Image (cartoon, rainbow, N blue to C red; front, side):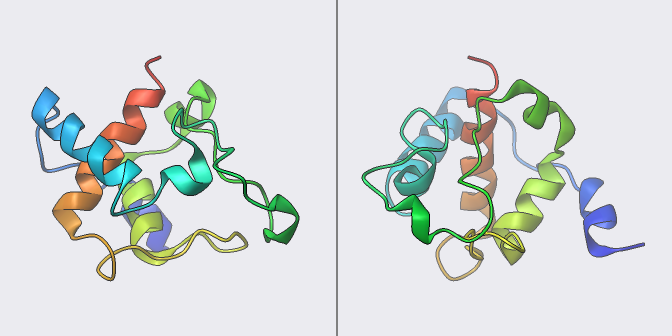
Length: 115
C-alpha cells in the first residue's frame, strides 16, 4: 500500500464547528498564507502572482465540488505534510503549521465546497 493509499483512510480528529472554521479561516488568510495562491475565495487565483513561473498546474480551485468529493481529508492532510509532487505546493507541516492547525485549515478549505 503506498503512502497516499494509507493517507486516504485518515480522518480529521477534530469536530467541525464555527470556532474551528474561524480558526481555519484566520490561518488560511494569515500564518499559512494559503490565500496568496488559492485566493480569498478559494478559486485558485491568488494575489498578483506571476503564474508563468509555476511548475505544473495552477493552484487548486477549492470551490470545485467534484475535486472536493474526490479527495479525502487524509489525502489533503498528507499534501499539507508532504507537498504536492509536480506542483509548487510545498510542505507546511511542521515548518509552518502544527498538525492541529493543518486540520483547522482543511476544515475551512472544505467550506469552499459547500458554497
